[in-house]
Amino acid sequence: MNHILASVPQALRPGMPASSTHAPRRRYSLASLRNTIAAWRERAHFRWQLKQMAQANPHLIDDIGLTTRQVEEEIAKLPFWQR
Image 1 (tube, rainbow, N blue to C red):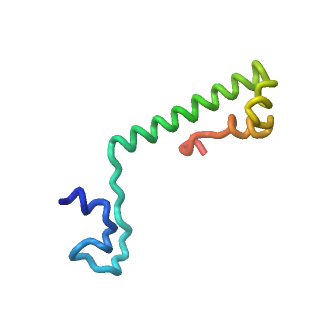
Image 2: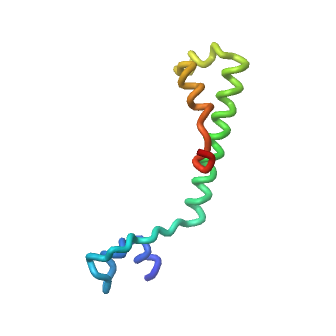
Image 3: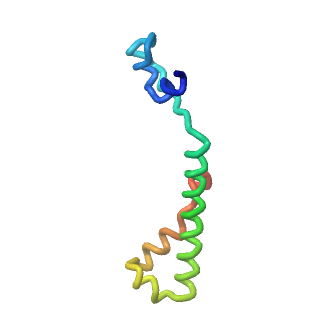
């Protein structure tokens, strides 16, 4: 029963006042953490590939529908913890 109530906002839980000043705590599963890490890795790999393509074959950037500026902006992006 606790796992069901974990997804319900604290203010809506039985026995809790509706005007609770505390924000509900979110619980994330290990699977969602793995998915998030996989997404970060995919984006980092995509940026690496984009950088390689821009250096080796800059004419291919036009073929994929991006401008040079868009490519430079995408390559320059950092993970959120390095901003």
